[in-house]
Amino acid sequence: MSIVGRYLGDFGSLFFPDICQACGTTLSQFENNFCIICLHQFPFTNFHLDADNSLAKQFWGRVNIGSAVAFLYFNKGGQVQNIMHQLKYNNQPQVGVAIGNLYGKELKDLALYQQVQAIIPVPLHPHKIEKRGYNQSEQFAIGLSEVMNIPVCTDILSRNAERESQAKQNRSSRFDNMQKVFSATTNTEKFESVLLVDDTITTGATLEACTMALQEIGVKNIHIVGMAFTE
Ligand SMILES: [Zn+2]
Image 1: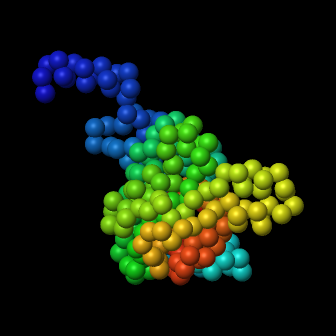
Image 2: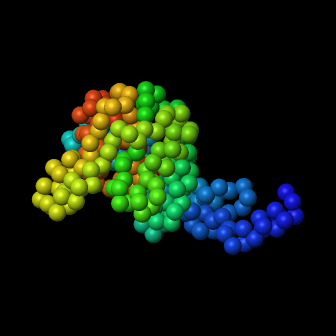
Image 3: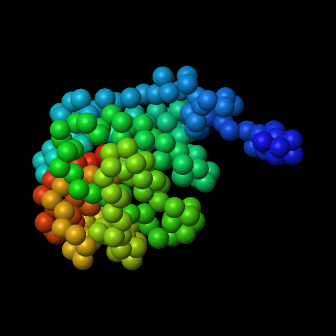
C-alpha cells in the first residue's frame, strides 16, 4: 500500500472504526462484524439439535411444517437486540449476511435440509423497503445461501400492503386477515421443499401466514429458520 493509501486508511479507521455489531467495542483487524468475546457469548438456542424445540412447538396445531429453528435467543438490552438494531435501523445489511454465514455452517450438513431447493425470505412491507433500502430477512437468506449452496428466491412470495392495512384496522379477525396479506405465485420453478426465513420470530403469525400461502401453491415441506426467537 502506498504511503498516501496507508495515511487515508488510518484516517478512515480513525473516523469510522470497525466496531462489534453486538457490543460496540472496536474490532481488531482479525475480527469481522463481531468481536471474539461476543461470538463466544451469543445466546445460542441449539434448536437445530432438538426437533421438538420451543419454537417448533409454537406451530403445533396451527400449521404443518417440516421443522422450525432460530439461531439466537432475543435478549432484550443485550447483544442480540443490538445486532437487530444495527441490521434494521442503522444501515448495516452485512450483519444479516454474517449471521446467516454463522448459522449456515451449523445447518448445512443436517440431513433435514439436504432436499431443500430454495431459501425464501419473508417479504418486507414496501414502505419499509423504501425506508431501509433492503429487506433484513433477505440479507440473512443471502448469508445462509452462501454457506449452504441453496439459491435465494424472492419472486415466489409477495406481501400485499393494502390488505395489511385492512388487517390492522380490523383487530377482531386479525389472524384471518393476516393470511390474506401474503400470496405465492407458481410462475417460477416448482419447489417441494424450502427454507422460509425471518429475522426475529415472536408469535409466528407472519410465518404461519407465509407457510399457508406457500402450501397453496404446492410446496410440501417448509422449514422455518429465524435469526432470533423471543420466548
Ligand atoms: Zn462484541
